[in-house]
Image (tube, rainbow, N blue to C red; front, side):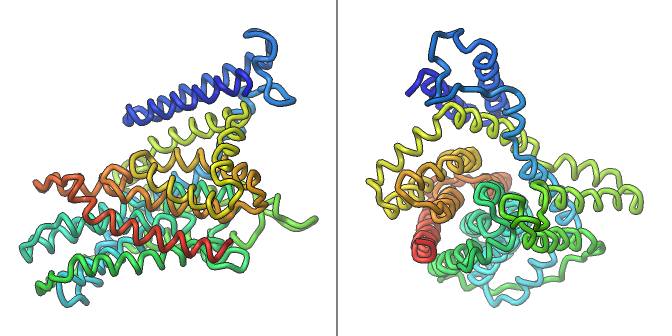
Length: 458
């Protein structure tokens, strides 16, 4: 390895260690690291011999990573999709439509066992289109109220709701940030999550995992046969936010049939790279304008902008630049070749390593920076084992990284949110208690997805 490759690898490793150690300031860490990469790239352009002859050499070229190159690495489509979807989801939650949907569902259930199963599956379905944490914040209080009524601990129920919502984040393009990142890297659109090149898409793989996991929940709650007394339903006076969310999803489906420039045939109409982001922002702005000028509700608009996850947006922006830096410095090629060599040239072994490495790592570290990093490495890994189409490895990464967070209480934001709700109610959840439900749930879902993806795509 050249000196700049080693330097970039060390800087990248330090960045990750600091993000693990100081989670509250991770955006600051990634932005600082990004600035260092840009400074090194600028020096390489202005004075390539400053640190000695050959320091900035990367193979047959020179490390060049200035401000222009760094900005081009930022995926504005991803950033806009996250911001727009989160804003629309807040309006949807405020309309109380999710609570009404939960009420209708629960009114059909005969006892507590089926309420937990139904709420868990419902949380998963909602989470396929709504942020995981928002889903937990919507549905967990419903479970909490019913558990109080029948006199049982809400801890198991809310844990199941949290892990179910995390599971379904991989089901659709807008289900989770990791899905949005994968879609960009693998050139996927909304419909590709359902059917991809004539194959069953990730949505159906996740549903199979959800069904197997539901059987696990059924077994764990088999003795909870307390009868449920249902009292009234939540009233929804404003259905417009529901139309906004549905409109967002339908629009994403519609434009998924229009190719991007890279996939378009000569002379064929193609869509801009930021199409999905523009759609998500547009529907959110429609909701904002309506609240401001028709309903005269400035407070909800203010709160909607507050609910946008700026923490994740800044984190991703810095991370995009850092990943661009390590690619330019040759680090991605080194890591990809190393993982490929572990598989001894076997696609199955490499696929297995990616899935289960992702499960283990995502149980302890945030899956967003991990997924963003690995997505740039996967094509190199695929090439190193002679696998021209990396789709299988992309899906394996998403499967492991998204579901792996369910192993531990700190592995996913949805889990942390659920435990936070329980703590406010006076319930302290031990890691062993969480893992009693999280581990069998995760293993059931991951093994199902792992096997299905291999037989579909290998």
